[in-house]
Figure (tube, rainbow, N blue to C red):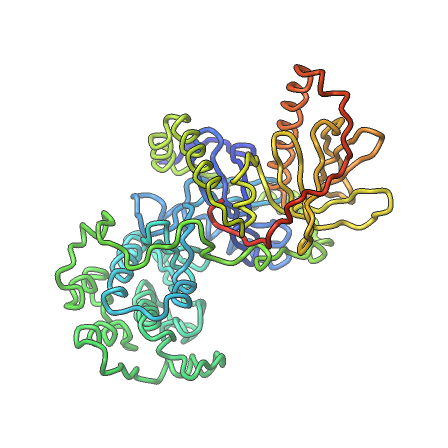
Length: 509
């Protein structure tokens, strides 16, 4: 059952960027009415058009709608989809514990027992997809995300495919994880491909590399050749049960492959390697994860490393009515997930109290090494990067890190040792303006000066404008109630005595 609620960007409070893909970015966000945290994946329509990716984008929306019913705790599911004139937006489960590729690089290879934990949860995720006739086609450690407790979910269904009516035959995926039948162009396949990829991925968790990638070669043709011809030699250190499992999953002959002989996931679950596993307990996430992501630490790339798109790439791309027509059926609400959200967050006060408690905990942290620590140790409303155009002699945009507080706006440049400040008392108005077709925030300052801010994305613009306007309005209200302070002179820009520390991004949002 799907609901026809018309969601817009205004229904979400958008936080910092946490990732980037081929067509757009992923942000942390909070649903305004319930307070529930999500990940917002925004695909740029111009970039999609430039790369002729319309079919891929629409396919991802269809695949997410297929797998997001039935409450599977092992897939990054979608609750809402909507679009703006410029963006396609997926509202997804927020996973802030990093991915298995990252943790493999930090933790080192996993033991058989540790690998077994991840295998059981991933198997249930694949079973959920296959029961809905969806083949995933891109199983690899980088696409397995951890939540804050260490449980995993399969993410990014951009390459997934519905095989209910017609089996796919396209050669897509990641070299070193693709099944032989996927590499053989023109050969039809189904869920069989995922079981071979699972074997490749489990081998990597144990050994640190794909079974078909020897000596760290990056030659895709050599990796594919080995996948099609080489029988994998398993180390003597592997237990007999593990060897049997991997040999079954890595069978080149589909008819002999584990999971492909008529009973799908049940064949894999009944393998001796999983003897003693209570699969109902796996589903309920009762088994303790071998690795719990450090709370408050960065489990992914920094914002500096994530970077940003070059807007010059899409400068000549125009979105026509025919382009927008492609997305007329894009909006969607998954009814059961919406109901669950409302049930979980029925009292707004619970979210408010939790935020206050978390802020107090962070305020006690004296080791100011992250931008988040600097912000959350105070009464910061919002923080992140914007482009600044100000001062009479500056004609170029300057990228700065901004902090919005109830009574001031602070900022600094990358690598700078000083922090600048503009008080709400000095601001005359907060307005919207346009510079070269780009929406900007205009701050008019006493004395006839002005300050122009440009955000790096539309969601960030909407949120910064909203929060700046509300903070300015509230500050003016308080100033009117305390007129005795109005005649005290202050300089427009002040250097703070405490230099900020170097920036690192966090998924803590």
